Picture 1 (cartoon, rainbow over the protein chains, first blue to last red):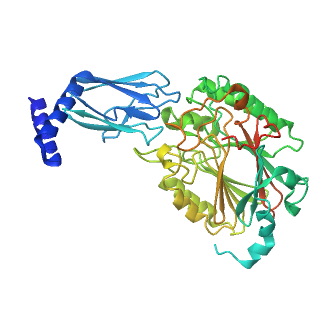
Picture 2 (picture 1 turned 135 degrees about the vertical axis):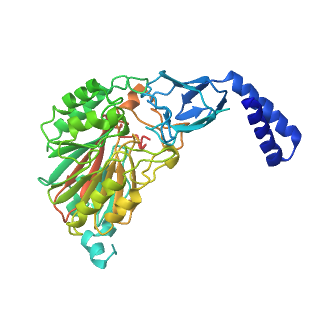
Picture 3 (picture 1 turned 60 degrees about the vertical axis):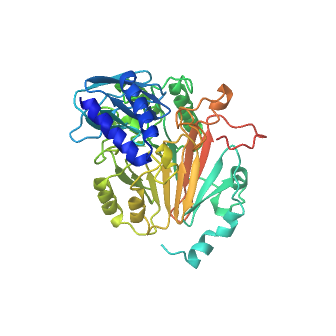
Length: 120
Length: 328
Protein backbone atom coordinates (compact mmCIF):
# COMPACT_ATOMS: atom_id res chain seq x y z
CA UNK A 1 0.00 0.00 0.00
CA UNK A 2 2.64 2.44 1.09
CA UNK A 3 4.83 1.27 -1.74
CA UNK A 4 2.09 1.94 -4.26
CA UNK A 5 1.71 5.47 -3.01
CA UNK A 6 5.46 6.01 -3.25
CA UNK A 7 5.56 4.51 -6.72
CA UNK A 8 2.74 6.80 -7.82
CA UNK A 9 4.58 9.81 -6.47
CA UNK A 10 7.85 8.79 -8.11
CA UNK A 11 6.04 8.15 -11.39
CA UNK A 12 4.27 11.49 -11.22
CA UNK A 13 7.53 13.28 -10.47
CA UNK A 14 9.21 11.61 -13.40
CA UNK A 15 6.31 12.35 -15.72
CA UNK A 16 6.32 16.00 -14.77
CA UNK A 17 10.09 16.22 -14.68
CA UNK A 18 10.91 14.45 -17.88
CA UNK A 19 7.67 14.99 -19.73
CA UNK A 20 7.35 11.59 -21.40
CA UNK A 21 5.29 8.83 -19.87
CA UNK A 22 7.43 6.07 -21.47
CA UNK A 23 10.69 7.12 -19.82
CA UNK A 24 8.89 7.58 -16.53
CA UNK A 25 7.51 4.05 -16.49
CA UNK A 26 10.86 2.52 -17.36
CA UNK A 27 12.56 4.24 -14.44
CA UNK A 28 9.84 3.15 -12.04
CA UNK A 29 10.36 -0.49 -13.01
CA UNK A 30 14.12 -0.22 -12.42
CA UNK A 31 13.55 1.41 -9.06
CA UNK A 32 11.07 -1.28 -8.01
CA UNK A 33 13.59 -4.01 -8.82
CA UNK A 34 16.25 -2.29 -6.75
CA UNK A 35 13.86 -2.21 -3.81
CA UNK A 36 13.62 -5.95 -3.59
CA UNK A 37 17.17 -6.96 -4.53
CA UNK A 38 19.62 -4.61 -2.84
CA UNK A 39 19.99 -4.30 0.88
CA UNK A 40 23.72 -3.91 0.90
CA UNK A 41 25.86 -0.82 0.70
CA UNK A 42 29.50 -1.30 -0.14
CA UNK A 43 32.10 1.18 0.99
CA UNK A 44 34.71 1.36 -1.72
CA UNK A 45 37.21 4.03 -2.68
CA UNK A 46 35.91 6.43 -0.05
CA UNK A 47 32.33 6.29 -1.27
CA UNK A 48 29.05 4.57 -0.42
CA UNK A 49 27.65 2.43 -3.21
CA UNK A 50 24.90 2.94 -4.00
CA UNK A 51 24.95 6.43 -2.54
CA UNK A 52 21.15 6.38 -2.49
CA UNK A 53 19.42 3.10 -1.71
CA UNK A 54 15.65 2.58 -1.70
CA UNK A 55 14.26 -0.21 0.50
CA UNK A 56 10.94 -1.38 1.91
CA UNK A 57 9.92 -0.75 5.48
CA UNK A 58 11.41 -3.40 7.74
CA UNK A 59 14.50 -3.98 5.59
CA UNK A 60 17.88 -4.53 7.21
CA UNK A 61 20.62 -2.69 5.36
CA UNK A 62 24.19 -3.90 5.73
CA UNK A 63 27.23 -1.75 5.04
CA UNK A 64 30.59 -3.42 4.33
CA UNK A 65 33.87 -1.53 4.35
CA UNK A 66 36.06 -2.71 1.48
CA UNK A 67 38.68 0.03 1.83
CA UNK A 68 42.11 -0.21 3.48
CA UNK A 69 41.05 2.73 5.63
CA UNK A 70 38.45 2.70 8.43
CA UNK A 71 35.09 4.34 7.88
CA UNK A 72 31.90 4.93 9.85
CA UNK A 73 28.21 5.02 8.99
CA UNK A 74 26.57 7.82 10.96
CA UNK A 75 23.06 9.21 10.60
CA UNK A 76 22.92 12.97 10.15
CA UNK A 77 19.35 13.20 11.46
CA UNK A 78 18.62 14.94 14.72
CA UNK A 79 18.00 12.89 16.79
CA UNK A 80 20.57 10.52 15.35
CA UNK A 81 18.96 7.37 13.96
CA UNK A 82 22.00 5.12 13.76
CA UNK A 83 25.74 5.19 14.30
CA UNK A 84 28.18 2.39 13.55
CA UNK A 85 31.34 1.74 15.44
CA UNK A 86 34.50 2.32 13.44
CA UNK A 87 34.55 -0.22 10.62
CA UNK A 88 37.96 -1.52 9.70
CA UNK A 89 38.56 -3.39 6.45
CA UNK A 90 35.78 -5.96 5.72
CA UNK A 91 33.85 -5.10 8.87
CA UNK A 92 30.09 -4.70 8.61
CA UNK A 93 27.34 -2.65 10.15
CA UNK A 94 23.60 -3.37 9.90
CA UNK A 95 20.54 -1.33 10.71
CA UNK A 96 16.86 -2.19 10.29
CA UNK A 97 14.63 0.56 8.99
CA UNK A 98 11.20 0.22 10.56
CA UNK A 99 9.70 3.54 9.47
CA UNK A 100 9.25 5.14 6.08
CA UNK A 101 11.36 8.18 5.37
CA UNK A 102 14.66 9.41 3.97
CA UNK A 103 17.70 8.78 6.15
CA UNK A 104 20.84 10.71 5.23
CA UNK A 105 24.16 9.55 6.66
CA UNK A 106 27.89 10.13 6.31
CA UNK A 107 31.30 8.85 7.36
CA UNK A 108 32.24 10.89 10.41
CA UNK A 109 35.94 10.33 9.68
CA UNK A 110 35.73 11.39 6.02
CA UNK A 111 32.74 13.74 5.96
CA UNK A 112 32.89 14.14 2.19
CA UNK A 113 31.44 10.61 2.06
CA UNK A 114 27.66 10.89 2.19
CA UNK A 115 24.75 8.62 1.37
CA UNK A 116 21.06 8.09 2.08
CA UNK A 117 18.59 5.30 2.58
CA UNK A 118 15.09 5.94 1.27
CA UNK A 119 12.55 3.76 3.05
CA UNK A 120 9.17 3.50 1.35
CA UNK B 1 50.15 43.18 6.02
CA UNK B 2 51.54 45.51 3.36
CA UNK B 3 54.71 44.65 1.55
CA UNK B 4 57.31 47.31 2.17
CA UNK B 5 60.58 48.23 0.55
CA UNK B 6 62.19 47.33 3.83
CA UNK B 7 60.99 43.75 3.51
CA UNK B 8 62.46 43.47 0.06
CA UNK B 9 65.92 44.69 0.93
CA UNK B 10 66.01 43.13 4.36
CA UNK B 11 65.57 39.62 3.08
CA UNK B 12 67.34 40.06 -0.24
CA UNK B 13 64.48 38.44 -1.99
CA UNK B 14 66.06 38.50 -5.43
CA UNK B 15 68.82 36.20 -4.26
CA UNK B 16 66.26 33.71 -3.11
CA UNK B 17 64.45 33.83 -6.41
CA UNK B 18 67.59 32.78 -8.22
CA UNK B 19 67.66 29.63 -6.12
CA UNK B 20 64.10 28.49 -6.40
CA UNK B 21 64.55 25.09 -8.01
CA UNK B 22 64.81 22.13 -5.71
CA UNK B 23 66.42 18.76 -6.02
CA UNK B 24 64.79 15.37 -5.81
CA UNK B 25 66.49 14.33 -2.61
CA UNK B 26 64.96 17.12 -0.61
CA UNK B 27 64.73 20.83 -0.50
CA UNK B 28 65.82 23.47 1.92
CA UNK B 29 62.78 25.53 2.68
CA UNK B 30 63.57 29.03 3.74
CA UNK B 31 61.11 31.48 5.06
CA UNK B 32 62.16 34.92 3.92
CA UNK B 33 60.05 37.98 4.44
CA UNK B 34 57.26 35.55 5.23
CA UNK B 35 57.62 33.78 1.91
CA UNK B 36 58.72 30.17 1.73
CA UNK B 37 61.18 29.40 -1.05
CA UNK B 38 62.61 26.09 -2.14
CA UNK B 39 66.35 25.99 -2.73
CA UNK B 40 68.67 23.12 -3.62
CA UNK B 41 70.29 21.74 -0.51
CA UNK B 42 73.76 21.62 -2.01
CA UNK B 43 73.61 25.25 -2.99
CA UNK B 44 72.51 26.31 0.45
CA UNK B 45 75.15 24.13 2.05
CA UNK B 46 77.84 25.85 0.00
CA UNK B 47 76.74 29.11 1.50
CA UNK B 48 75.47 30.49 -1.78
CA UNK B 49 72.44 31.74 0.05
CA UNK B 50 74.43 33.96 2.38
CA UNK B 51 72.96 33.94 5.85
CA UNK B 52 70.53 31.16 5.04
CA UNK B 53 73.08 28.36 5.14
CA UNK B 54 72.72 26.62 8.47
CA UNK B 55 75.31 27.22 11.10
CA UNK B 56 75.68 26.14 14.69
CA UNK B 57 73.10 26.87 17.31
CA UNK B 58 69.66 28.27 16.70
CA UNK B 59 66.33 26.55 17.17
CA UNK B 60 65.97 23.16 15.58
CA UNK B 61 62.90 21.00 15.52
CA UNK B 62 61.55 18.10 13.52
CA UNK B 63 58.11 17.35 12.17
CA UNK B 64 56.88 13.82 11.68
CA UNK B 65 53.38 12.85 10.65
CA UNK B 66 50.90 10.10 9.89
CA UNK B 67 52.54 7.15 11.63
CA UNK B 68 49.28 5.14 11.44
CA UNK B 69 50.49 2.60 14.01
CA UNK B 70 48.24 -0.45 13.58
CA UNK B 71 47.96 -0.22 9.79
CA UNK B 72 49.10 -3.52 8.24
CA UNK B 73 47.81 -3.59 4.67
CA UNK B 74 49.65 -3.96 1.38
CA UNK B 75 50.90 -0.38 1.22
CA UNK B 76 53.14 -1.06 4.26
CA UNK B 77 52.91 -4.16 6.39
CA UNK B 78 55.23 -2.84 9.09
CA UNK B 79 54.54 0.79 9.92
CA UNK B 80 56.24 0.45 13.30
CA UNK B 81 59.51 -0.40 11.54
CA UNK B 82 59.31 2.65 9.30
CA UNK B 83 58.48 4.87 12.29
CA UNK B 84 61.56 3.41 14.01
CA UNK B 85 63.62 4.35 10.95
CA UNK B 86 62.26 7.88 11.10
CA UNK B 87 63.21 8.08 14.77
CA UNK B 88 66.67 6.70 13.97
CA UNK B 89 67.02 9.39 11.30
CA UNK B 90 66.28 12.06 13.89
CA UNK B 91 68.70 10.53 16.39
CA UNK B 92 71.46 10.30 13.80
CA UNK B 93 71.50 14.03 13.04
CA UNK B 94 74.75 15.65 14.21
CA UNK B 95 72.86 18.54 15.75
CA UNK B 96 69.89 17.40 17.78
CA UNK B 97 66.55 19.20 17.48
CA UNK B 98 65.05 20.81 20.58
CA UNK B 99 61.71 19.13 20.14
CA UNK B 100 59.48 17.12 17.86
CA UNK B 101 56.11 18.00 16.36
CA UNK B 102 53.83 15.13 15.41
CA UNK B 103 51.07 16.38 13.13
CA UNK B 104 48.59 13.62 13.76
CA UNK B 105 47.38 10.16 12.78
CA UNK B 106 49.70 8.70 15.37
CA UNK B 107 47.60 5.55 15.20
CA UNK B 108 45.37 3.89 12.64
CA UNK B 109 42.42 2.92 14.85
CA UNK B 110 42.93 4.83 18.14
CA UNK B 111 43.55 1.55 19.98
CA UNK B 112 45.39 1.63 23.32
CA UNK B 113 48.02 -0.83 22.04
CA UNK B 114 48.65 1.40 19.04
CA UNK B 115 49.12 4.48 21.22
CA UNK B 116 51.43 2.40 23.45
CA UNK B 117 53.64 1.47 20.50
CA UNK B 118 53.74 5.03 19.23
CA UNK B 119 54.74 6.35 22.64
CA UNK B 120 57.34 3.66 23.09
CA UNK B 121 59.03 4.30 19.73
CA UNK B 122 58.86 8.10 19.87
CA UNK B 123 59.91 7.91 23.54
CA UNK B 124 63.34 6.74 22.41
CA UNK B 125 64.02 10.36 21.54
CA UNK B 126 65.15 12.40 24.49
CA UNK B 127 63.24 15.54 23.61
CA UNK B 128 59.81 17.03 24.21
CA UNK B 129 57.13 16.00 21.72
CA UNK B 130 54.12 18.13 20.84
CA UNK B 131 51.16 16.40 19.28
CA UNK B 132 47.98 17.34 17.47
CA UNK B 133 45.50 14.57 16.70
CA UNK B 134 44.56 13.28 13.27
CA UNK B 135 41.11 11.87 12.55
CA UNK B 136 42.48 8.37 13.18
CA UNK B 137 43.42 9.29 16.76
CA UNK B 138 39.93 10.31 17.84
CA UNK B 139 37.90 7.40 16.47
CA UNK B 140 36.80 6.22 19.91
CA UNK B 141 35.09 8.01 22.80
CA UNK B 142 35.31 11.46 21.19
CA UNK B 143 39.06 11.51 21.47
CA UNK B 144 39.18 11.07 25.25
CA UNK B 145 41.87 8.40 25.12
CA UNK B 146 44.01 10.65 22.93
CA UNK B 147 43.60 13.53 25.38
CA UNK B 148 44.40 11.35 28.38
CA UNK B 149 47.78 10.59 26.88
CA UNK B 150 48.64 13.72 24.93
CA UNK B 151 46.28 16.40 26.18
CA UNK B 152 48.36 17.66 29.09
CA UNK B 153 48.76 21.41 28.83
CA UNK B 154 46.33 21.65 25.93
CA UNK B 155 42.83 23.02 25.66
CA UNK B 156 39.57 21.79 24.17
CA UNK B 157 40.18 18.92 21.77
CA UNK B 158 43.95 19.28 22.21
CA UNK B 159 44.87 22.69 20.82
CA UNK B 160 47.80 24.55 22.34
CA UNK B 161 50.44 27.21 21.91
CA UNK B 162 53.96 27.69 23.19
CA UNK B 163 56.99 29.89 22.59
CA UNK B 164 60.40 28.60 21.63
CA UNK B 165 63.39 30.64 20.55
CA UNK B 166 61.33 33.73 19.83
CA UNK B 167 58.90 31.79 17.65
CA UNK B 168 55.25 31.36 18.62
CA UNK B 169 54.02 27.82 17.92
CA UNK B 170 50.30 27.08 17.63
CA UNK B 171 48.94 23.52 17.46
CA UNK B 172 45.41 23.39 16.08
CA UNK B 173 42.89 20.53 15.95
CA UNK B 174 40.75 20.25 12.81
CA UNK B 175 39.59 16.63 13.01
CA UNK B 176 36.69 16.68 15.46
CA UNK B 177 32.98 17.49 15.07
CA UNK B 178 33.17 17.14 11.31
CA UNK B 179 29.94 17.85 9.47
CA UNK B 180 28.42 15.72 6.69
CA UNK B 181 29.64 16.87 3.30
CA UNK B 182 32.25 19.14 4.86
CA UNK B 183 36.00 19.34 5.27
CA UNK B 184 38.29 19.58 8.30
CA UNK B 185 36.94 21.97 10.89
CA UNK B 186 38.41 24.15 13.64
CA UNK B 187 35.14 25.30 15.19
CA UNK B 188 34.13 28.54 16.94
CA UNK B 189 35.58 27.76 20.36
CA UNK B 190 39.07 27.07 19.02
CA UNK B 191 38.96 30.04 16.66
CA UNK B 192 38.02 32.35 19.52
CA UNK B 193 40.88 30.92 21.56
CA UNK B 194 43.26 31.51 18.63
CA UNK B 195 42.16 35.12 18.27
CA UNK B 196 42.92 35.72 21.96
CA UNK B 197 46.13 33.72 21.88
CA UNK B 198 47.82 35.87 19.25
CA UNK B 199 46.49 39.22 20.48
CA UNK B 200 49.42 39.89 22.80
CA UNK B 201 52.05 39.18 20.15
CA UNK B 202 53.84 41.82 18.11
CA UNK B 203 53.43 41.51 14.36
CA UNK B 204 57.10 40.74 13.94
CA UNK B 205 56.80 37.51 15.95
CA UNK B 206 57.34 34.55 13.63
CA UNK B 207 54.40 32.16 13.81
CA UNK B 208 54.47 28.42 13.19
CA UNK B 209 51.06 26.76 13.02
CA UNK B 210 50.80 22.97 13.00
CA UNK B 211 47.65 20.95 12.43
CA UNK B 212 46.75 17.62 10.87
CA UNK B 213 44.53 18.41 7.87
CA UNK B 214 45.95 21.09 5.56
CA UNK B 215 44.77 24.59 6.40
CA UNK B 216 44.57 25.41 2.76
CA UNK B 217 42.47 23.94 0.01
CA UNK B 218 44.71 21.19 -1.37
CA UNK B 219 41.92 19.11 -2.92
CA UNK B 220 38.46 19.54 -1.41
CA UNK B 221 37.07 16.68 -3.53
CA UNK B 222 39.07 14.37 -1.27
CA UNK B 223 38.39 16.39 1.85
CA UNK B 224 41.91 17.84 1.79
CA UNK B 225 41.17 21.21 3.28
CA UNK B 226 39.68 22.91 6.34
CA UNK B 227 36.38 24.69 5.94
CA UNK B 228 36.99 27.51 8.45
CA UNK B 229 40.75 27.91 7.95
CA UNK B 230 40.23 31.35 6.35
CA UNK B 231 39.09 32.68 9.72
CA UNK B 232 42.20 31.32 11.43
CA UNK B 233 44.44 32.83 8.77
CA UNK B 234 42.64 36.17 9.11
CA UNK B 235 43.78 36.33 12.75
CA UNK B 236 47.34 35.72 11.58
CA UNK B 237 47.25 38.18 8.71
CA UNK B 238 49.11 40.96 10.48
CA UNK B 239 52.14 38.77 11.17
CA UNK B 240 55.09 39.11 8.82
CA UNK B 241 56.02 35.45 8.92
CA UNK B 242 53.59 32.58 9.21
CA UNK B 243 54.53 28.96 8.46
CA UNK B 244 51.77 26.36 8.40
CA UNK B 245 52.83 22.73 8.82
CA UNK B 246 50.37 19.96 8.08
CA UNK B 247 50.20 16.22 7.41
CA UNK B 248 47.17 14.12 6.39
CA UNK B 249 47.93 13.89 2.67
CA UNK B 250 51.05 11.70 3.01
CA UNK B 251 53.13 13.67 0.53
CA UNK B 252 55.11 16.88 0.36
CA UNK B 253 53.22 19.82 -1.00
CA UNK B 254 53.64 23.53 -0.55
CA UNK B 255 52.02 26.80 -1.34
CA UNK B 256 52.77 30.43 -0.63
CA UNK B 257 50.10 33.01 -0.14
CA UNK B 258 51.37 36.47 0.81
CA UNK B 259 53.32 36.11 4.03
CA UNK B 260 51.94 32.67 4.76
CA UNK B 261 53.72 29.57 3.59
CA UNK B 262 52.06 26.18 3.73
CA UNK B 263 53.87 22.88 3.82
CA UNK B 264 52.77 19.27 4.22
CA UNK B 265 55.09 16.50 5.40
CA UNK B 266 55.54 12.94 4.26
CA UNK B 267 54.00 10.11 6.28
CA UNK B 268 56.16 7.60 8.12
CA UNK B 269 53.66 4.84 7.18
CA UNK B 270 52.48 4.88 3.55
CA UNK B 271 52.16 7.31 0.65
CA UNK B 272 48.89 8.57 -0.79
CA UNK B 273 48.25 9.49 -4.41
CA UNK B 274 48.66 12.98 -5.82
CA UNK B 275 45.33 14.86 -5.83
CA UNK B 276 42.93 13.46 -8.39
CA UNK B 277 45.43 10.91 -9.73
CA UNK B 278 43.54 7.89 -8.33
CA UNK B 279 39.90 6.95 -7.69
CA UNK B 280 40.33 7.72 -3.99
CA UNK B 281 42.91 9.04 -1.53
CA UNK B 282 43.46 5.56 -0.04
CA UNK B 283 46.91 4.12 0.76
CA UNK B 284 49.07 3.86 -2.34
CA UNK B 285 51.11 0.72 -2.88
CA UNK B 286 54.48 1.46 -4.41
CA UNK B 287 57.30 -0.93 -5.30
CA UNK B 288 59.15 -2.20 -2.23
CA UNK B 289 62.32 -0.35 -3.21
CA UNK B 290 60.40 2.93 -3.56
CA UNK B 291 58.57 2.91 -0.25
CA UNK B 292 61.32 4.42 1.88
CA UNK B 293 61.88 7.14 -0.68
CA UNK B 294 58.35 8.44 -0.21
CA UNK B 295 58.26 8.18 3.58
CA UNK B 296 60.21 10.53 5.77
CA UNK B 297 60.54 13.43 8.16
CA UNK B 298 60.87 17.21 7.90
CA UNK B 299 63.71 19.02 9.61
CA UNK B 300 63.26 22.65 10.57
CA UNK B 301 65.69 25.21 11.83
CA UNK B 302 65.43 28.78 12.97
CA UNK B 303 68.44 30.91 13.82
CA UNK B 304 66.82 33.93 15.32
CA UNK B 305 63.76 35.98 14.68
CA UNK B 306 65.50 37.95 11.95
CA UNK B 307 66.46 34.88 10.00
CA UNK B 308 64.24 32.58 8.01
CA UNK B 309 62.97 29.20 9.07
CA UNK B 310 64.38 26.41 6.96
CA UNK B 311 62.47 23.23 6.16
CA UNK B 312 64.19 20.15 4.76
CA UNK B 313 62.13 17.15 3.72
CA UNK B 314 64.21 14.06 4.35
CA UNK B 315 63.05 10.69 3.01
CA UNK B 316 63.94 7.56 5.00
CA UNK B 317 66.08 6.55 2.06
CA UNK B 318 67.65 9.07 -0.31
CA UNK B 319 67.00 8.91 -4.04
CA UNK B 320 69.95 7.94 -6.18
CA UNK B 321 71.82 11.06 -7.21
CA UNK B 322 70.80 10.74 -10.86
CA UNK B 323 67.10 10.44 -10.14
CA UNK B 324 65.61 13.88 -10.57
CA UNK B 325 62.07 12.93 -9.80
CA UNK B 326 60.11 14.62 -7.06
CA UNK B 327 58.85 11.19 -6.05
CA UNK B 328 55.13 11.94 -5.97
